[in-house]
Length: 65
Picture: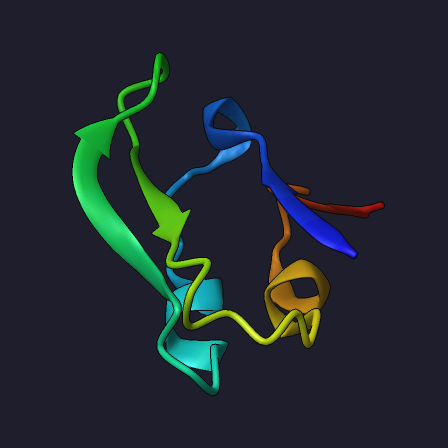
């Protein structure tokens, strides 16, 4: 399973950041085209549990192969 990010959809709510059990999701300080600070994923820490996908109201995370 691969995790893809659509950062232009991110509104910086932080649900994924506070929900990640491995602290693999964080704000990287950059702004998307809408002016929101978006998240990034540390692939080395991510266990692909899907919690970020489940809690995100803006469909930023996409699970795939």
